[in-house]
Length: 130
Image (tube, rainbow, N blue to C red; front, side):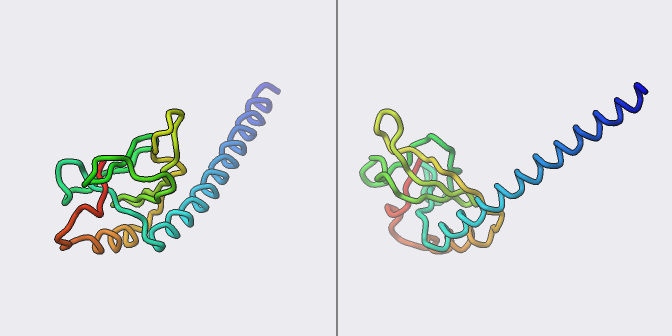
């Protein structure tokens, strides 16, 4: 009787884990569509502070600066990186624009295409830094 109870508990746990994994996959697929749309619409790619030739990775809650003025980009700006991450700048509790509403796409080609748009450009001030 005890082994039957253990088996039922194990089956219930495995079923719950499977349901959670399926929900996570569905959520990831929805976010991927958002990220793809952002890349296709022309998100602003973010580069490193020290070199415009080095890409930076977006991190939720961090600010993104204009390379020329060293000020934050405006609220509502859609930003992206070379890894497939995208985000929208929203105001934090202090009113400072920070990366939020992040979405990821596993389609590296979209990120590469966005990077190719800025490669070879003589002026890098269009690419913000962080």
